View 1 (tube, rainbow, N blue to C red):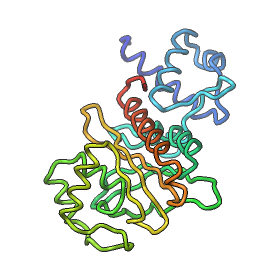
View 2 (view 1 turned 90 degrees about the horizontal axis):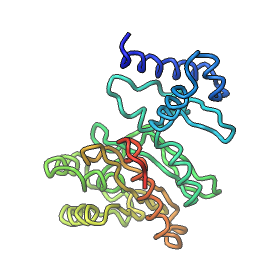
View 3 (view 1 turned 180 degrees about the vertical axis):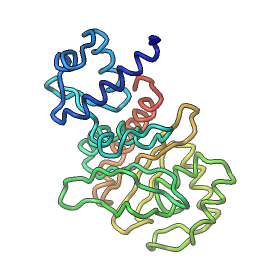
Amino acid sequence: MSETVRSAARVLDILEYLAGAPEGATLSECVSALGMPKSSTLMLLRTVAARGYAVKDGDDRYRLNNAFAKYGFGWGGHRLTRLMAIAEPIMHDLCRTVGETVLLGVSGATGIKTICKVVSDQIVHYDHDISEEIAPYCTAMGRVLMAYSPPQQIDSMLAGWPLVKRTPKTVTDLGELRKIIKRTHDQGYAIVEEEFASGGTGIAAPIFDQNRQIFAMLDVGAVTSRFHDKRDMIIQHLCQSAEQVTNAMNHKSAA
């Protein structure tokens, strides 16, 4: 067996062992169960943790990331499972920091598909049903997606939904929407205040692939009455978190 194949087999051994250890396992337990050298086992555990497939808790126990365990291995080129596995702990941290709901979205068939959310535990909080796609023209995630998409794709997204006023503040003028999309690209994030739903403000930032093409969007859904008091703080931590997910997806150390 070549060294390359042996290394691949050991990664699979690690993942399969952790899959059967819901309470997690220490380095020593992994070494004992798998019969591998301690040094290489440690490096393998660090690798699968860095890639988002496993997490290490405060007791030095490794376990499968909840999103990875729930949604499957995501092999065969399906990056969304890995995206969710990497993003979920970052989303929980962001939710705790800003005190508002955090959502993760990607491009859907015709609109924006929310694939993961962490809902704020405040009594009054933002939330929405993620089972259906949402319109790109009146949402922060949609405007971020359009801001980093080719012109033809922007036209398609704007034409794909009736430009209706969901609230009195919804922008439906095509010329104004194109200006907003350009401004979103220039500043690196979007803010949509009560255009999708009255009382709610969305703030979104892009997540990029290794070619700096937009791959997903990270969003804070805030109650508007609280947003203005912590506007700058939310934008700062949101953009940092989106970059952290980007770096982790592309195997780079987050700043």
